[in-house]
Image: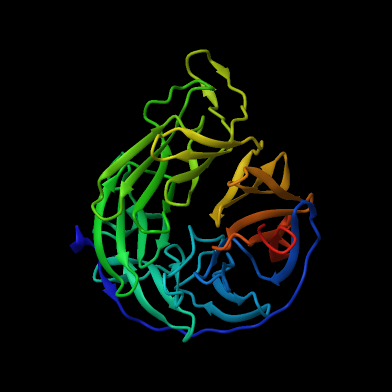
Length: 384
């Protein structure tokens, strides 16, 4: 299927700047806010492999890169062809830390090359140019959806949705981030989340299980693990949640963490009664060798916004009746390290530094009147 994708080289300009500030959330446990980065928005975050630079999807049609050692914004991308208002689907650094992979604006400024739509760009953070673009598969552009993407070392995995038929089809494409050439692609049963283990060996997708029933309490969430080199289905974890798996992240090379929205099945066609919201375990960690649940963190959330892991740490942001809920767990304990809460802001994005010592959190005031990124130390001097 390599012929379905293409590579093109182009260029674009950049800008930079800096400012401060917003409301202080309540901090509990062994966490400490050490930095505030002023933003027009913060809907996706990504750390560079060395843990020094932080990329931000502002959600206003722009991207920024911050040097967290100095607190200075070092690069900004503002171009009508890039950046999605309201935020894209994901954000990631290339394995060498030289590029940030950013989604194109396919709604307000779609670009076509050779009959295929531009879906992703490789933004060079040194020059400010888009060095390469990745094109979607062969299909009408308005029937293709970019669902998620992730980077592991020198590989980029992308999850596409094809809506040409009544039943959506899904496709994983794997690229080499040194050349931006397609390595392989294959069809998958997946609809929501994608994760790439740090060794570039395994790719996971989350979906709604076809075996789940219609009533509250029956298992619905499913995780499928694929070999990144061959596309072979390695294992399938069924009934992992009582709702659709919405976020995934690998913890080391042999465990995966998942979360799902609170169960809400709407209207039961059999009993003709409204079903109730039911709390489940919103964060679960699974052992891939045995398929068994290794850990479970019972934190009731209505909607999980973001999930991230790094250095043995897992972080989650979400809501529970009110805005602004955020938790950090040490999976090697296991224990809850701490939490943040706010009644005036939402925590829209989360990214754990690869070393597990800090975590970045997107913070937006109610009504969208103020945005910032909080950099939070885990432990008194980082992760203990």
